[in-house]
Amino acid sequence: MKIGIDLGGSHIAVGLIESSGKVLSKKEVQILKEDENNIKDVIENYIFGAIEEFRQKGKIESIGVAIPGTVSKTTVVKSVNLGLENYNIVEALHKRIQEPIKIKNDAKCAAIAENTYGSIKQYSSSLFLTLGTGIGGAAIFENKLLSPEDVPGFEFGHMIIKHNGKLCKCGKRGCFEQYGSMKAFKQKIIEELELDNKIDGEQLLKVVENEKDSHIMQEIIDEYITDLSIGISNLINIFEPEAIGIGGSFVYFADILLPKLKDKILSDNLLFNKRESLIINTAMLGNDAGMIGASLI
Image (cartoon, rainbow, N blue to C red):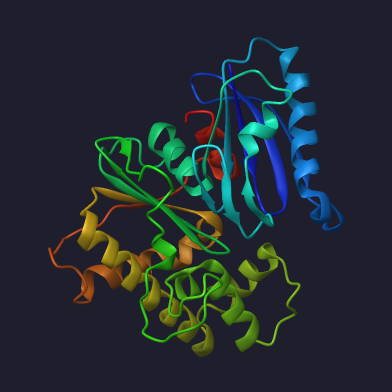
C-alpha cells in the first residue's frame, strides 16, 4: 500500500491508497488561520501522526506529496498558498519517516490520477487543467507526464493572453489565470450582482443557475468563456491533444459553462488545425485526485 498526501491552501489530506487507486482510508484536517505562523510544524506533525496510524493497517511502500506551487525534487521552492519558500520537505519528513518520499506539483498529481483512473485514462495524449483559485495544468504524451528536470513547468495559468492586462500575483500582467480561473469568474459575478464576498460556492452556483437567462449573467458568462477559450485554444494549437480534462471548481458549473466553451473554441477562428469535434471531460476523482496522483509519483 502507498500513502498519498495532498497539501492544499486550506487543508492537509493523507490517504492510504491501494494499487487500484482506491482510497482505503483518509485523514483530513483544516489549516486554520492561527496555523500559518508555524505552518511547517503543523504539516509535519499531522503527517507523522497520520502515517503512524496507517502503519497499523499494513506495510507502507512509499509516500507521495502533492503541493501547490513550484517544487523541485525535494524542496518546495515557493508555494504562495501555503506561505512556504525553499522548504526541503523531504528532508524534514525523513527525520521520522524511513519510506521513500517523492513530491510533485498538485495539478500534475491530479493529472496523473485522472490519466490513470479517471476522465482522460482512455487517451494517450491529453491536457489536464485545474480551474480554481488559479489555473494549474499538465501535458501528457504517450501516457507520460511531460515535465522539465528541476521545476514543474507547464505553467499554463501564467501564459499571457492580454498585453498589459491585470496584474497577477506572479508579478506579470495579463496572465491566463487572471481571466480564465474560477476565482476570476466568481469575483466578476459577485461584483456585478453586488453579492456578499463571503458567499460560498454552493450558494453562488444557485445564483448562476437562477440568473443564467438574465442579460447581465449572459454577459458575464460570455466574457468568461471568451477568455477561457483563448487560453485553451492556444494550448490545443501547441499540443494537439486527443482530449482535455478539466478539474477544480469548474466541474460544479460544467452544465452551464462546458457546452458554451466547446462551441466557442470550435466556432470561432481560434484553432490552427480545424476540428469538427472536441473532447473535454470533467474530472472524475474530485478532491481525492491530488492525493491519489501523489501515491503514483
